[in-house]
Image 1 (tube, rainbow, N blue to C red):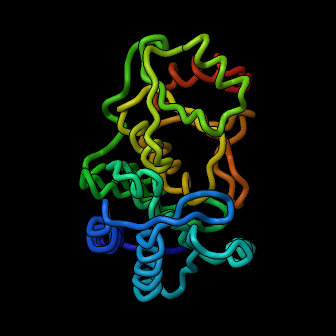
Image 2 (image 1 turned 90 degrees about the horizontal axis):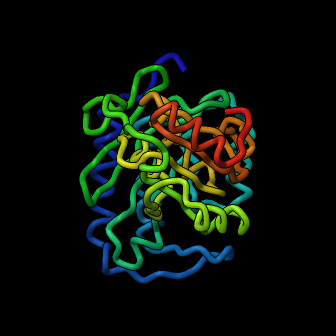
Image 3 (image 1 turned 90 degrees about the vertical axis):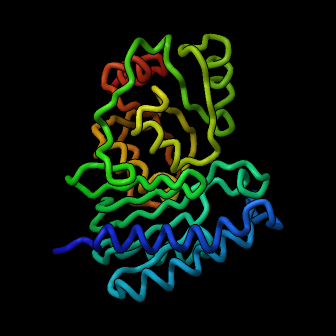
Amino acid sequence: MQTLPDLHILQHIVITAAREELLPRFTRVERSHKTDGSVITAADLAMQGRLQTALQQQWPHIGFLGEEMEAAEQARLMADPTRPLWVLDPLDGTSNFAAGLPVFSVSLALLYRGETVLGLVYDPIRDECFSAAKHGGAQLNGEALGRHRPEGPLKKGIGLVDFKRLAPELATRLVRDMPYSSQRSLGSVALDWCWIAAGRCHVYLHGKQKLWDYGAGHLILAEAGGYSCTLQGDPVFQASLQARSAVASLDLELFVAWSRWLGIQSA
């Protein structure tokens, strides 16, 4: 792409939509379940429809893939890497949203030629907008991310860990031989990445996340100067719909110590 979409226009579109489609429905929403058992609400569908229309009106040359689309349509859109493509999770943390827990976000990534070139994650409860452009740094509400890095050894840090999608053996080991001082789980993958980028937690682990979950957050952490890999030691980002594991930290020493504890030799 010769020119990326204007980030200020993009932020206005996403923030306005979240305030008008998500916040009025929060704590007032009926939920149902998809075929895979995950929760879906009217807010997911309203937000996806609103953003699809707005983005295609503003940038008609860019394709659009939303989490709530049919799998066949998602695969069709991913089959052409030469066309820029929006990848949206309209409500990341739907279970939290439906239960009345105030931890959820909107995640939007722009893919082009097999990489993420723009990412935005908006937390409407805290009015926090995380964003990044490839080779352009990462910001939180306009302030640069990465300047305040977590300190101290792994043993004294906070681990941001989603146990639900880990192998039982690894989950058991984490509880039995806890390598950090305490553990948290947010329930929103996009915010996981952003909170690591902001230095709010020291290390991160998730066993299975999709492209719309991590596409924007992965870029935000990378542009903040952070580090990540899969549990196999491979790059997390992959321009595919296959689920990926994620190991991350904003600090290199913490990332190396965490990766070695997990048995990742390439870190």
